[in-house]
Image (cartoon, rainbow, N blue to C red; front, side):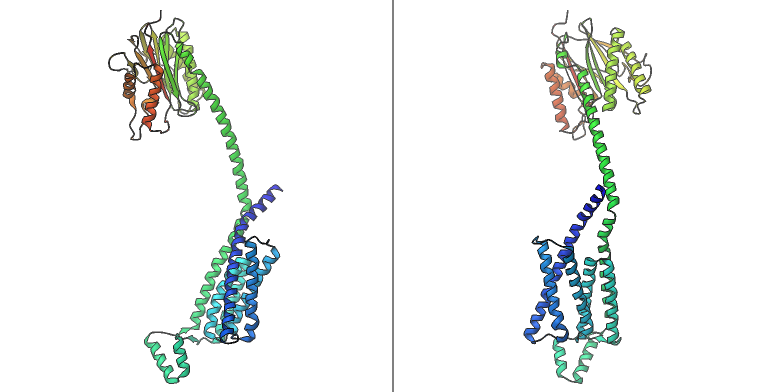
Length: 512
């Protein structure tokens, strides 16, 4: 029942504009024909005192005016919302307007004493009547009247005879010929020959008239069938709309669920990253860090792990790609590094070997990740002014209290983590000294590869220069400034990759 009501309502929605257009067209035709014939009656009565053919015109012409103006009054009232339309009155005035037009067409061509104008008027009226019949009653009715029109035209031509011709003359010439004799007529005929004004055979006129009527029927036929075709297709269209609505609702529900899951994952990721209170409590170092994901969940990793002996391990990593699955791998990596550090006793190489083994089994074997997600991962261990670096990642930037920034390249200190089952033998450790006030800067490639509108990358050198410029500022101020400079560099463009930055300053006094 609900579907039937929906079909009926949809059909009515489609019909309403069409019905309004039809009513407007009929109103215009009613006003034109009613006004035209009213003026014609008035002109003839004023100039001749009678209508040209009293036996026909005295009843047909007033009836023509009356029906058209009455139909115009009804349709005008409906369109202006001064009255409601009814199916009975709609049918009455449509049929009446067409019938009186049909009668006029037939009477003009078969009862008009002026042969020269009868076929011309008949052609004009036939084209109008075919169009209106198709518009108001349907294309089959238009086809029927088209047949009547051709038959009427054929009878009219047969009555005139195939030798009948139209001769082009001005009104002045006609008046002159009426007052002159055969000599003037012969002279006018010779002039017509000199001017190449050939008489128009009635058969040619009949062909042209039939062609006009055929073209009108063709246009009316297809236009009248348009709405019917739309209504016939409504059940299929409504089914597709219902299917689309169900699919849209399913997608909206799925999007809501995924959004909730992403929100949970984002919260979990934020919870496992070290917060400001934890960073402030790190002994011997002033540390600030931030990660901004390109999507809801990022694939960057950083961590600060205080060891039982008071030393500090810094972790920086970047999982390939970004998004939820990369975020899951990031959480696995963080957990694996924490566990491996405890097992190895802060042996950086052994920690990386163990973390690699765990991630390889989880990502490549169990998850069967089609992206083969892995990560670059560097571990830094700071104790008593000594910094050890292991693992492959972006270069570590060291900005000392004096002098130019230094870059510790990590390409020779390891390989991708989680890509192969064993990386033992592919790792190295580099050690350097740090003085109180020296800065260590860790970052992911989202920062260095951020592009400006000209397609230029931000680059590690700019990071180093900015840190050197602000080396006397607090670590948090340096991190904030770096993010602001990167944002300005990108000119408001969306992030293409996650960005992580960590700045660590050695304390003025080393821990006891």
